[in-house]
Amino acid sequence: MGWFGTVIGGSLGFVFGGPLGAIGGAALGHIFIDRKDALQEQRRSQQQRYSAYDRQASYFVALFSIMGKIAAADGSVSAEERRVVEKFIRDINLSERQRAFALKVFEESLHSNYTVQQLAQHFFSLTPGQAAFHLNFIDLLIHVATADGTVHPNEEKLIGIVARCLSVDGAEVTRLFRSHRTSYPNHYQVLGCDSSSSNEEIRSAYRRMAAAYHPDKIIGKELPEEFVELANRRFREIQEAYNAIKEERGIR
Image 1 (cartoon, one colour):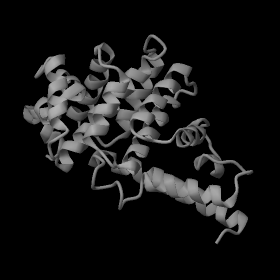
Image 2 (image 1 turned 45 degrees about the horizontal axis):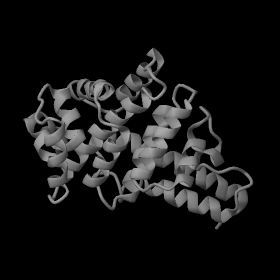
Image 3 (image 1 turned 90 degrees about the vertical axis):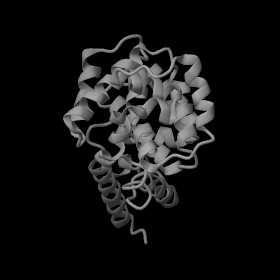
Image 4 (image 1 turned 135 degrees about the vertical axis):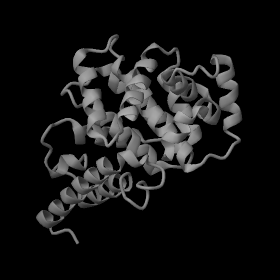
């Protein structure tokens, strides 16, 4: 049953409380806690120990709730933005119930009074010290935000807020945006670099991006299993780009 058992078992609001528990619970049709109780539960949750399943559930709920806030950053959610999110959900190996839950979380976040900062801060409190995990999270948000070919300044601003809440450096965010802004990136763009970047800059970019998808750091530990194939594809893309640049430049 995995992490989804935590959700459908009806314990979501009690497991990690706070804004994510409230939105996830509402998406299930179970309003476990009101806003005041949610914040109290969040403070208590910071003193608890969480299982890998709990953290995976928080990743899932945080991702789709924050996607909702970003999609509405320009004042409304367009049909194209909904299509992009729905396509992203189809591209992940989700069951029918998980797809329905993801869409419901996305919709609930649109009507929630919680801010993107509160959602991101709560997610960070549930997954402390997971730098690669958080970089992976930001990369996915940017992947979806840029999928329709345009990024509203407010969307970019909100992603920056999420990144700061997760302690992801602004320079990393800039590199990730550069990596996703074209449908057919060259090898340098995959790494968020360009042909003028030094060998050391390229090595550093590769190490950081690969760490966000490396099987030993992400897959099978904190990332929900349904995201594993997506992570594998991204990891292969990063490796192939770096190997091509190394061959081109004679990097050892």
